Image (cartoon, rainbow, N blue to C red):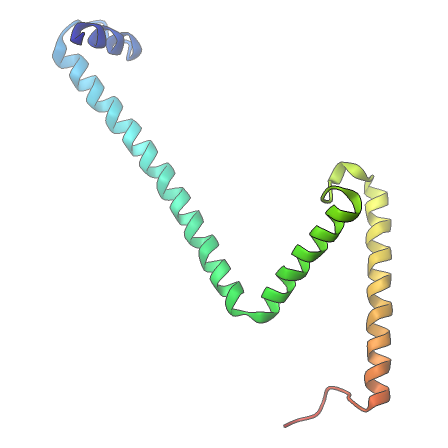
Length: 130
């Protein structure tokens, strides 16, 4: 069994000499390189996860960001119920996407103007101090 493993390893590592020491050294080097690559990969993933966790914690402590996130979740769910899927880039041409965005912004301007007029009429101009 050991001989078969040694032959396989020697072939895999392109070792010509049947000396066990060479195969062992090569195996150790191979394992070391593999471990280093694996460690670097895992370290990279850990750093990414830590960054995402920090962003999530910051977001959760900011109620405005949490409300915006919930709005995105609600809108996504609404779109799935209405259209059966989420937004996909291939559904519209770039010009159609521009038109859609312009229409959405026009709607938001209408909502903001209505709110502004309502606040003006009620005397709440946003400049009150406590």
